[in-house]
Amino acid sequence: MSVLTFKGGVHPYDGKDLTKDVPTRRINPKGELVFPMSQHIGAPATPMVKIGDRVLKGQKIGEASGFVSANIHSSVSGTVKKIEPRLVTNGTKVMSIVIENDELYEEIDTNSKNILENCDKKTLKDAIKEAVKEAGIVGLGGACFPTHVKLAPKDESAIDYVIVNAAECEPYITADYRRMTENPKELLEGLSIVLHLFDNAKGVVAIEDNKPDVIENLTKLAEKYERIEVKALKTKYPQGSERHIIYAVTGRKINSKKLPADAGCIVDNVDTIYSIYRAVKEGKPLTERIVTVSGDGIHNPCNLVVPFGTSHTQLIEEAGGMDENVEKIISGGPMMGQALFDTDVPVIKGSSSLLLFKHDEVKAAKMTNCLNCGKCVNVCPEGLVCAKLAQAAALGDKEMFIKYNGMECIECGTCNYICPARRNITQSVRTMKRAIIADRKKG
Image: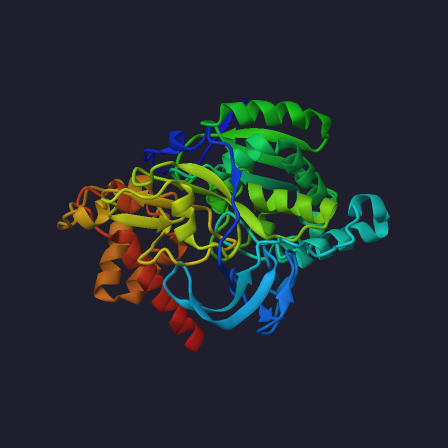
């Protein structure tokens, strides 16, 4: 099997040995659970319950309020205590439904039927899309784009690849690895379900080659599927970027002005595909996910199946507590995640990991003047002159920033990682991009 990749990228210490061999363990949340109405790209969901209502596990409590939006479901049974703005991982406050868990976990009766067995060819595609939409499934790799929208491109006949993004290139995170290890058959069946929507497509499970065991197992299991194959990717960050996994698998390039569908591709994360399987075959809405809790600052690194709404504080408790010398806590991966100042924030659909470190490398780094060494250019997966972009951002020169294709930056952090001068390139570029986007919206 050939190993596929792209130009550029870096090889940070991956830290996956801490948790990759730790089987998932389901936890039961305590006390109040918080369900933000915005856990996805697009319009926030609209609350469907009021204070004092009793809800059941799996009950829809927030309804998608636009074309690009997603439903929200309760992960427990209990009573609605509050509907108010609550803090989330990015430091903002989002309108949220607060439910007091009664610890009975009474589940709503979905009268679920296997859609594949109860629809004819004429109605099957619409039934699959409706099941995905009703289940509130979004991209669980971090982007959180509503999946039912992604599965409805303008020209479905033009889609010739459905790619399962199984790279999991961010250091420390092993949630997708455990899903592939523990639920390989469901993953392939989920991909087969998506292929029902695209008559001309073949399915590819694209996995970094640091996971040889799951590559071997899935390759063997995929033999029974005529339209599914497994491809090995070179282990390199950011191999899991949507643009670069498409290039690695197909040789096709997209940029910020194009969607994957413009290159004939649909790309979905491992857990997203698994969630599609559960929605279509079992009638289950998206109410939980695997979260990796890891780093040198946690006593028992692990992989937990976590109901949405659970406080990150409880994840720390479930992992044996944190070291007293922890300096930095991150929601997500160390390259693109959000540093937390408060762990009393809820696990949401995009919460892939919680990392705790005894040393804050960013804080300790001493920034010096740019050395003009060109290392950032060599590793940038988009081929950008990162130092020039940072210079333009520092000067507030939007014209220069656009000239050097700054809007193509995917904010992966490879330039920061490799920079010997410890320049905070990614943050300055991100800030400038936001300013330009804001200007365009005004104009």
